[in-house]
Length: 180
Image 1: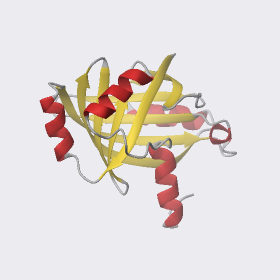
Image 2 (image 1 turned 180 degrees about the vertical axis):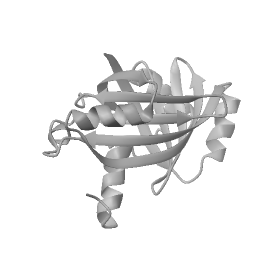
Image 3 (image 1 turned 120 degrees about the vertical axis):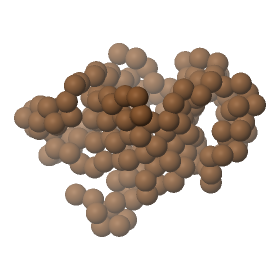
Image 4 (image 1 turned 60 degrees about the vertical axis):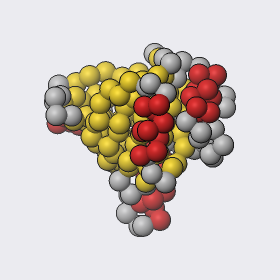
């Protein structure tokens, strides 16, 4: 299993950060539309264990990918750090049916558009998340690399968000009486 280390901050708009990334000679990879479906057991045991299960559908003009991802409990550190195990699947409905047959229920979904940039062994994601706003995520090999890039982007003084989009969406839905 891989270890995911990431920092996330909320920003008002993304254009100035696109320009900063260009100035830093970051490599633009692609813009992806993502639909994430989060699942749990009826007793919410994954949530209680601080773990997660997600089906992700990624769409670009050139490709359409589907994956299932398990995220382990958060580990210590300045930034969000957790184990992650991801596998590709060929059909969305098969993934949904398989997980339903194993007792998992779909709890919520998150829709976002993600611009992916690469710099210094790190991936910088400029995310526009439906209902939640705009965010920057920096995923890197270690905290020092993430901190350096956050400083270069001038976001190092912004409040770091430790919650994932699923938690943030659950809060949004609960506030708006739409959460199961």
